[in-house]
Amino acid sequence: MKKIEAVIKPFKLDDVKEALNEIGVQGMTISEVKGYGRQKGHKEIYRGAEYVVDFIPKVKIEIVLPADRIEEAVEVIRKAAVTDKIGDGKIFVTPVESVVRVRTGETGADAI
Amino acid sequence: MDTGDTAFMLVAAALVMFMTPGLALFYGGLVRSRNVLSTILQSFICLGMVSLIWVTYGYTLAFGTDVGGLIGNFEYLFLNGVGTEPGPYSDTIPHLLFVAFQLMFAVITAALITGAFAERIKFSAFLLFTFFWTTFIYLPVCHWVWGGGWIEMHGTLDFAGGTVIHINSAVAALAAAIIIGPRKGWGKEAMPPHNISMTVMGAGILWLGWFGFNAGSALAADGIAVNAFMTTQIAAGAAAFSWLLYEWKSHGKPTALGAASGAVAGLVAITPAAGFVSPMAAIAIGLVAGVICCMAIRLKARFGYDDALDVVAIHGVGGLWGALATGLFASLAINPDGANGLFYGNPGQLGIQLIDALAVIAFSLIGSLIILKLIDRFVGLRVSEEEEIQGLDLSQHSEVGYTL
Picture 1: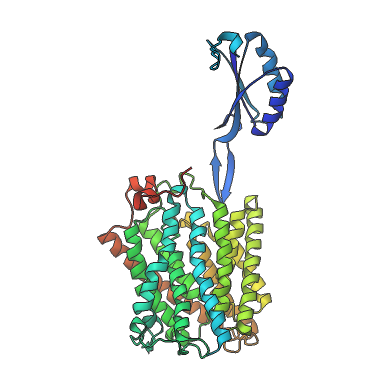
Picture 2: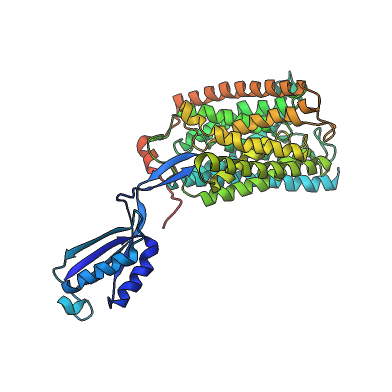
């Protein structure tokens, strides 16, 4: 099992969710996060005083899937989230040791 | 007594009162969230303290019979002899109503200064400052311009308080910003306003209240009041628009804060002129006010004083422009009790306006510096660094503006 953490532009969340639904991904956890990469922050101006705000809002999607489905899911997320402009985000994939479904106690791939 | 005038002036006085809570919101939105209540309170409590000063010894020193052109006498101490019969300043409204109307002006003048030392003054020091400043600066200047003092005799035109209120408070604000010093991190870290919606709302309330301020300064429901009402609207609108366009051109984006700030700048500028100039002159006064006050925001960075909420740029520069503009655009055709300005063949009026404004600037600056220095020496003006970082709401008042 592996976990995908995708940090994307907030307005792309619906597209990504739809695309994942279409390939049968059945759940996800999202959070509103702030951060910056190469895009850097944005500029705010109050009475002519300019402030650079480093951290800009993004959405982080977390999904855990069997290892053989990861490649497809990553590609689907990337295609749905891309705008070709700087600041589209990043996708991280990490191994997951175990999963437990709270209601039934199932473990491993059955619990995903 | 005229019941129409009295009814109008009651409403006008209430409108001017409403400007102070409006100012509290205007300022409150501009500070960081940890200082919102302290900033609002500093305006709001002026309604308490200054009211007491005014009805005990304030009114009589400002409007009692003139002593040497400098101050009023004590004839109205504790409002002695002030009743519901028309008084010396109007034949058509009760003397007590004139006291009430003028009271609201004294309140908001003290409140205006709070924008300069916001986010770092000790509450006790603020109260002392407001007490001494109102007593030793506001009352004499009010007397000079409106109570039969030397500036009034000199022939200056100040319809609703451009000099008494705006220039006077802005100069005190400059002194306060200099003496108390910049906020921790000023110029190095971002200090963005925490709620511009609140600030725009406050500007709207100020705008509404200003109709009472300017039209009410006619002291009667007459044509002069109507003229002042209209010039007020025009100048505020013109300045909101010109500030917006100017910043759009110079900074790239039109902003809500810019429009709100411009409206206040226009209201300040038209204040001394409202009952003396034509509606078309008000367009010029407003358009210029929006641009020069926006430009003046840069002064604090240039000269290194942290006037936190731009009292000097908006009330000082706007007030001075208004005083001079009155000397340019005033017309006897609009108000036969006024005078002609430069554009109506009387260049001398502009000189009178300038000299008297400079006199008030000098007096207010020196007097305010002395008061601030003394308070700093004996009580201390600033909160500790730790309290400043914690925020004045918690450190001075043990409450917070937002619990989310």
